[in-house]
Figure 1 (cartoon, rainbow, N blue to C red):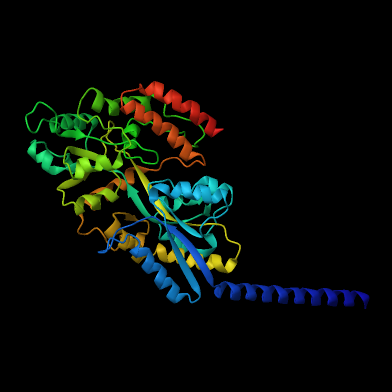
Figure 2 (figure 1 turned 90 degrees about the horizontal axis):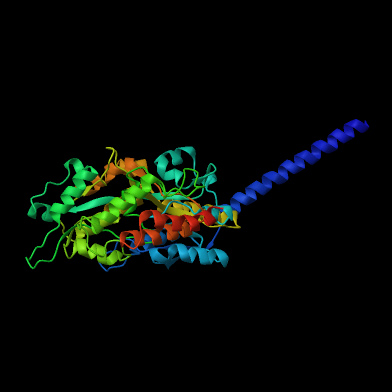
Length: 436
């Protein structure tokens, strides 16, 4: 009888516990479904409307979301792209992060430092396996660490060369066939495109130019063409001092130093000046840019084409980026669910098609690409072909400082102030400390 009572008691307690758990889960679901409050989202400027408002797209998404989620208020904080990473770093230190923020498309995915400090939320529970399958694997990989999804990819970009075809025609130079060329062909054409236009004895038009600036990688595929890379595959060792990397740096620097096919400004950090020389001044025939520049050149009514970076082994290489959104740490389960719903809307198929057509980015969703957003855009079709050759810059929690150490020395190389081996020796001394 005593045994029976014990069993009965255990059974009763178990049933009570199960009931409490069930009630708890139901209560959790209820709280999750009924969450209300303010959401803070940061974003940089995107494409402008007819009133030059570069936040109109996000404002509409936010307004529609508020209508479908009564009691939810979406606050948009405008942040220039160039300031985004620094502001996030400061906010992390001050524990004042937004709920959602974009990942710059020119970067390399979610910063490992945010993951290490548990500042960002894993999102796997909010995305089914079928939903994940709609993302291209390389796009999703940029937001995945240790098997967990720490953000939602929204768009991809790739660096390519833009060629002013009017200058090619004026100089009777054939553009590269199918946009592909060797280093020898490239340098030969750059020489033919460089000339004194007005006959005053001074070069007016140059074949090539680019810039070097922290966080920007337009010039880097040139440094990759012999097989060099900044860090080892596991991001544990500095490798930009390899013979392959050093020889490529010398080749790039020699375009200005000895071949004289680039202006003295090449290698500076003047992004705007470099673009103006190509798009407005028409004083440079070829420049490397990220995908956004294609729509900008189209807006400037330029006659241009997209080409690959030159190669020495027949296989081109370029650098790509994956932009998207990430959710920062949350205490409330209900709010996390609502934030995930907003992130799904920001990265929806329809919104990715809109971005592709208006912002010059490639969708990260297969379903968006299936809508053929570039059917009437030859240059974007040309650039899209290069995505198969794209690699990402290394992912390391100290990448921002590593990048600064390298870019500073690259500027000195392209300005003729240092030899590649001396510059990379200096960079290595700083980077090695950051890799410890």
